[in-house]
Amino acid sequence: MTLYINTADQEQVIIALRDGNKIVKQSTFKASRSQAEKLLPAIEKLLKSTHSKLADLKKIEVANFGGSFTALRIGVITANALGYALNIPVVSESLRGVKKFKKISVVEPAYDRPPNIGK
Image (cartoon, rainbow, N blue to C red; front, top):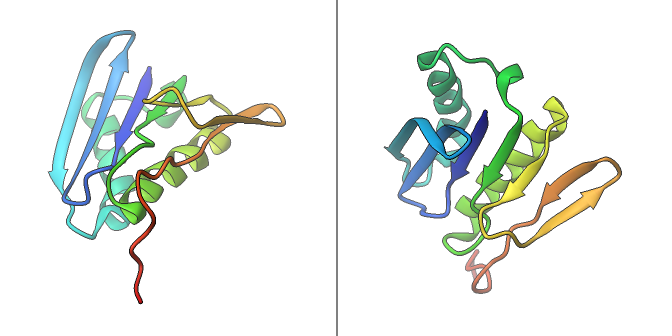
């Protein structure tokens, strides 16, 4: 089973569980400036709703291009941390920015503009 994470839009988050090309369950929720607080509990809820566990995941796919600097980074960091903890591959939706680090794959965010984090 594959966990899909998309936090590129700073206003909403999309997560899904897929079995091959079939979407088992998808969840979209508002998360304006609160992706970090809502993402992991939403993943847990999604897994529970399908009677699945983290151990059932075989891969994580994450959106790593475009969107808000911070929102994008939250999704990528979460995907990489889960992939590392579960010892499963992490791949990017855009098929770019995947790096091999020792025996694991790590996805890097690909920003489409410089961060706007203050003046």
